[in-house]
Image (cartoon, rainbow, N blue to C red):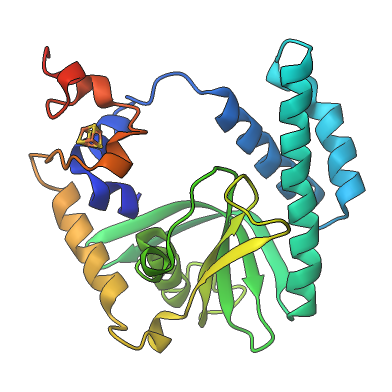
Amino acid sequence: MVDRFGQCGLQWVLRASGGDGPSMGAQDIGTLVHEIAHDLGDTDAASYAAELERRWGRLGLPPGWLSRRDLARATAMTDRLATYHREADAGGWRRAASEQAMRVALGRAVVGGTVDRVEVGPSGAVRVVDLKTGSRKPTKDDLARHGQLGAYQLAVEAGAFAEHGTGSGGAALLQLGRAANKTTTLQVQIPLADDPVDPGWARELLERTAEGMAAATFTALPAREVCGTCQVKDSCPAQPEGRRL
Ligand code: SF4
């Protein structure tokens, strides 16, 4: 949400007001993968694949090659998840929780929601891992200043997951969808305290965002990479489709 607000305040307020429109198939598949990851915990690829097949009918897709193709895509995601578990385990990161609710006050902002996965590392540091099932991933530079990951780190340090620890071990995006490489792609943001340029960047960003969200006006910030996939384009005065409003 921090990132979405930073990209375009108008998009954020329209989506937060229910302007997303009906859910799409890709989102449903992503939701199913998240659900299975949580319900089964860390397990092997075959168990995930069997569960995917068992629940697949719930998506209501018409039988045929499109449904089979999507199931194969979803299975590739859970295969990557199973591979990641082995890699995390080998690196000393153990799963402490999944789908964990959090709510913590950080200055003027209250950061709340549910995180996909909480891990504890070999030194006891805590990191939040966001499972991503889409086709886009941030660049290395964007990752270093990824607001959502920064907010997770601040939340860890403020005690949002105190039962697991309060030292931040960074935060990460685990790419399971088309944005992944052949096996797994874990994009790790280093601990805030280790940031060589500005260890305070996340707190400053959150303060700016909280101030902006409390404002009475929201500015449209057109940018090709954001507007191209914007789900509220029809209501945006910066776009030809939205000017009639
Ligand atoms: S179309 Fe672009 S400028 Fe308009 S709300 Fe969406 S992201 Fe913002």
